[in-house]
Image 1 (cartoon, rainbow, N blue to C red):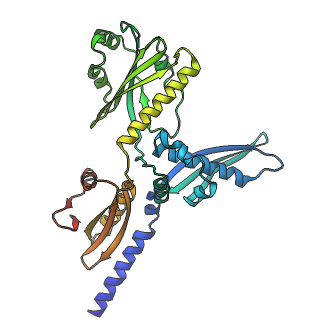
Image 2: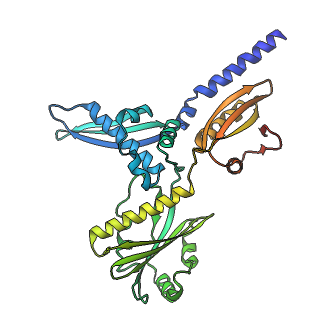
Image 3: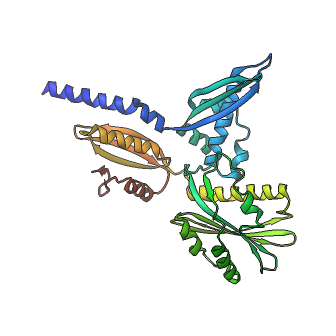
Length: 353
């Protein structure tokens, strides 16, 4: 009996060591930002460390801009380099070279998720989950009299929309093909254009996400009615832009940037993580299946809405986890169901079966 007891303790401890020090788990707890490219002239006072520091800053802002709404960008502008470095777990130099008296470096930087979220929480910023999605984007320009439209030709927004995209942006846009049948259909619906749902067009592209952007062109302003659809939501937004001439390149670029920020912010709001809410959930899992337990930890590490988790205790039958979840309990249950976890919630301590 004494021998069996010590054998049990040995294997339980070994299992915990595997859980805590698995390199896969460490990676899952990180935000990975790759292909950060920096270049500097190779002069007398050249300092490679300063170039690397610039790469850290560039990687940090690329990451955080993908997490937060554009209205919060200014809140992090003055972050110190030491603060950024304190949130870095690892970095690697993928490539470096000297060409024409210039130093080029390509970096990969890994940031600790918990530290990033804590930093944003201190700044009173709610981050969103990083969910990259493709949206069908249909921009329709309607003249001020409401009797003429531009969809493909003579539509500078359609022509220039995908010319410039930022790496941190979560939405990738698919523009519709120039289809005469679609053009005629929209013209037929011109009188009810604000209530028309465009389903006859969007269904051709087999995408669950779409953005219909109606741009009413007045003499001195643009009124823009946007309908954003995904498989769960329909969001309608009205915006007005004054003193914008879309035939002017600078005005057009500014409008496109503003609209993309608007769509990104709406998408982020839909996937926001309320880090001020931390709901404790206790879950037990049988300890006779190491792979199952390890996979469960990997799963917890990959869910951004899981603020933290720890092994509360273990006995000869079960490992008990305490999970801190940023959101409603039902959201956690839904996430578990989506990942095919059979969760028994009938008792105070839930069980994965």
